[in-house]
Image 1 (cartoon, rainbow, N blue to C red):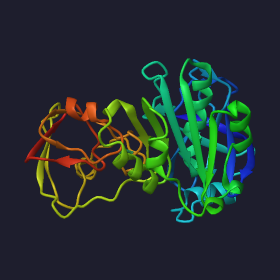
Image 2 (image 1 turned 120 degrees about the vertical axis):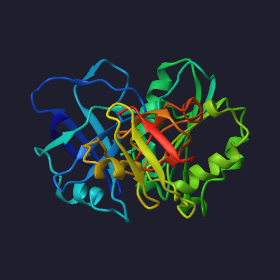
Image 3 (image 1 turned 180 degrees about the vertical axis):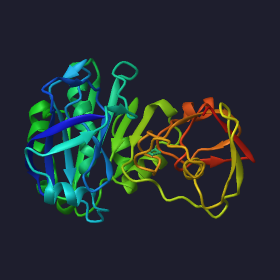
Length: 315
Ligand code: FES
């Protein structure tokens, strides 16, 4: 954990605040690469993940910047930040973690799509892409121009490579299929609301897994009707427990009295990850990619389940 002080709170678009954090001890912070996020431990007990907009892959950095949109369906996190967080306040945060890393050498022609507050990791990525040999383009979307964070900064970055789509001006959402077929893209990196990412996922179904990278900020709805009970075994301690149909493996660990780390409890942040020793996983998270799932060694116990009758964790 890192203790920070809020060094800046600035409205940068309608219902969007830019928050800057610096270490309270005056030291530099651990560096982070584009796509990285931090957990904010809010005084109201909530833990929320926010992408860094100023993560450029340096070993250390003097501050972390995040952008927070007021969420109409806020469960308290974004409302608290907008209503209560002020310059000079102290906040406990996690070290940066990156589940949405940008590979600047694997692909030549890359499309970035950032919609709504999903522009935050994408903004960090395009700043990096500009320094690389990548032939990149950005489609930045928002309901209206007034809600578009970093609009001026993006234009200043490279006006020829950045396009905007504002739903209210265009009379509807972006046509994903038209965008994806507008050029021979080698890869797409996207962050935004579920509907947009679902459309990209459907339109790129035939693409190689490594060519489609997305980060969701809300978990996809799960169908739990087929859930079955299974045995959870801990290889190091030899303890075991039955995981109920309406219980997650993480909750079963907690029922055993194990103080296992967690943050989002929605399969988004990766904090609760465990190493799988044995068993058939039923992955339901947004953390692991297709390759990692096939390897079968990583498991996200706050949402994922068992495809058989027994899982063994390296705990
Ligand atoms: S607690 Fe965030 S992925 Fe499990």
